Structures are given as structure tokens and as C-alpha cells.
Length: 272
Length: 245
Ligand SMILES: Nc1ncnc2c1ncn2[C@@H]1O[C@H](COP(=O)(O)OP(=O)(O)O)[C@@H](O)[C@H]1O
Ligand SMILES: [Mg+2]
Image (cartoon, rainbow over all chains, first blue to last red; front, side, top):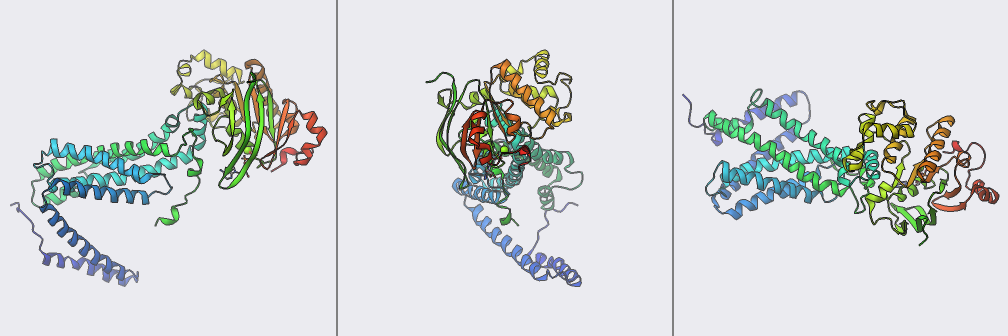
């Protein structure tokens, strides 16, 4: 009885505008004043994703490794920019730190998946590399930008402890190691929790999409298992690389804590 | 080189955010001295003290420690020059874990036996406490002594203290200063104490550096500074100096 495919036509998509119409009616009834924004958002979703669909179609036709690596690099650059924007405090050279940590973890994890797990041929086939690379980069971005914020919060909280340790003869790394450990814990625990609960409450998006597109749930499950493990490793690697670079920015060459970096949330005004 | 000269400041200045916190300080400190840096709140005393163990560096001028630039070996400098901060922190965990904290990078501390730890507690007057007691349960004054014990485990030659009496009643204030003086004699330490309480300090220190608005306005024994009326000039006269804000 299982259908091979639920193909969504453009007509079907237009019918799904019924959802928007219902929302508009409800919003008007409550006089929330959000109808116009919602209509703009509706339009943008339509245009952005459609354009993206054409771009990807064109892109997937270019069977060349340079295109695949180029697109991944652009995604990493955008992610590093976005991660920098999300920092509540200024961290010197944070853009480069993000770049290196995302690049390092993406190369390792994506390479392993393409070459040894999925055994994709040719290895640069964008059908595998781009969506999986996108998940690695997106997940790495979310995780590292939270961890960096948490790390700075730890440094602020432990400023006096850190200077005490330095005074007892600790190296900068030894003096902030507890802060690094605390932020790694905060980063990894949600990931471990999702390893515990995945599938119990909600099916992950990738799996849902695959099942809707007609793929055997048992195959979809295998993909999802690999993705869960991949996510965890991404978070671990990207955060560790990022922290190993970032902690150094908080010290001078003379092993002094740069307390001025811990003083103000002077960038919070630029965040919405 | 003069053998017993331990610190030498040459024309040391410190600017932070365009603000002049310390201005053209030149002086030397000799081995075994008991020196106090006095001045009103905001005079720059803590900023100066942090330079003795290179927690901060001068914007101009130079500092020498035992005849070589202070930054030539920062880790060994910091082990040689212990500091007790104003309101020192103790770490999460037991008294023993606090004492052993430098054992993470210093093998001579990680190998210490319990009886050696107890003897250091004895030295700072904490002999009544178990090594297993949670350090955060100690009173402020006891935490201060524990922090002092941690620095002593590095066998420093110099001890820096930032307002060690500011949160203590007068009896405990005298007790901690007595302890510092005892340690100086027993361990052959050089002591540099920052304070704004010149009445208490004159019972212990041999020499005063008087700081006002980041400048040295007088440097010498209490007797000489009294004759010059130096304390009055910087607003440290009268008996109630500790009420200065
Ligand atoms: N990081 C800093 N940035 C700007 N001003 C500072 C900084 N640290 C200290 N100050 C200022 O420098 C002056 C001296 O501070 P401090 O050395 O703590 O004085 P004291 O210990 O004598 O009370 C004060 O006016 C203080 O506000
Ligand atoms: Mg002070």
C-alpha cells in the first residue's frame, strides 16, 4: 500500500496558502497588527526557496569538485559571519576562529562520510556533499556560537579565580581550563540528551522528509542514526577547536588576563 | 648589581583607556624589607601591586626582578612573588583541594602528603580544621588564611598583600598582620602591603611609599614622613583613616 512518491505540484503549494489565509483571519480578529508582516514573510519564503531550488538544480548539474568545495566554503564563511554577529561580547579574531573550527570539523566529518560511510561516487557529488555539509556547518555554527558566549560568561564569572591561578604560576590554559570544561559540558549535554530521546517524541526532520519522499523507513532510520552521531562529533570537534583558539585571545603575550575584554556587553545593543 | 635589591622600578607609568593611573614611579625594594604602600582609595595602590607579579605591565618604564627584566620568566616570577588579593577567592571543594590546586602544574605540590598540608595550615593558624572541610564554609578571615597558605606552598620570596585588613575587625586585623610579620621572620620574606590604614601599618612596616593620584609623594620610614607632614598632605591624617572612601 505504500506509495512510491508524494509529488507536490505547484498547485498543491498554492493550496497550502490556505494556512496563511487562516492565520491572517485569526490575526485580524485579535487585532495583532501583524497581517502585513506575515504577508511579506509568506512571499519571501516562496521567493527565496524557489530561487534556491533553481540555484541548487543548476548547481547539482555542475559535476565538478571545485563547485562543491566552493559552495561549502561560502557556507562556512556565511556561518562564521553569523556566528560572530551572535557574540554578546567582542572576542578578538572570532571570525577566523569560527572559520578554522568549522573548516576543520567539516573536512574531517564530511570527508569520513563521503569516502568511507556513504562511499559516494564520485566523492564530490553535490547530492550528498551539500546537504550533509550544510547540516554539519549549521550544527557547528549553532553549537560554537552558544559555547563561545558561555565561555566568555564563565571567564567573567571566574575572573578572580583565573588571576589567582595565574598568580600561583598557572599558564593561561591551566588558568582557564575549568571555564573551558564548563562550556564544553554546556555544549555537549543537549546533544547527549537528544541522543537519548530521538524518535521518542518527534521524528527528526531529515527522516520525516525521506519518509514523505517515499523512502523505506528502515533506510531513513539508518541515515538518521548516522546523522545523530555526526552531529555529536561536530559539536565536540568544532567546540574544542574553537575554544583552543579563543582562550588565547583573552591573554596577552605576557600571560596576563585581558580584563578589559570582560568588562562590557558593549555589543549587546547591536543584537536584536 | 646590588645583591639584595629585589625589585627596581624605573620611571614606571600605567595608562588605561587614556587615563593615567600611575605616573613615573621610580624606587627599589630590598630583600627582607617590610614595605607598605599607603594612599587614599583610588590612589592607584592595587594597580601598582599587580605589577610586582606581572599581572599587569607598565605602559612606560621598566621593572627588574633580581636584576633581570620582570617578564623574562613569568611563571617562575609568579611562584616567587605570591599575592594575597583583597577579598581572596577560595575554590569549590575541600581545604585539601584548595591547597593542592597548584598541583595541577606543579609536581612538588601534587606530591604533598597530608601531614605536610596540615603543617602549612598550622603555619597560618587554621590547625583546627579538617583537610576535608568544604572551603566555602570557612569565614572570610579563614578563607583569607587559606588563600595565604596556598601561596606559601610555592615557597615565595616575596609576599604581596592588597588591603589584607580591610574586611576584618581590629582584633582580626592585628592578628593577620602579626601572622604576616611572623612569616616574614620565619621564611625570610620580603613583604609589600597595600593599605589605607597608616595607624596599623606603622606598627609593622619599616618603610612607606605614599601614593596620591598615581604619583609617589613620599618614600621613607614613618618617622621621616611624619616630620615632613606627608600623611596630612594626602588626606591620611587623624585617627579615622580607615573611614576614607
Ligand atoms: N581597568 C581600569 N580602567 C579604568 N580605570 C581604572 C581601571 N582600574 C582602575 N582604575 C581606576 O584607577 C584608579 C586607581 O585604582 P586602584 O589601583 O584600584 O586604586 P586603589 O587600590 O588605590 O584604591 C581608580 O580611580 C580606578 O577607578
Ligand atoms: Mg585597591
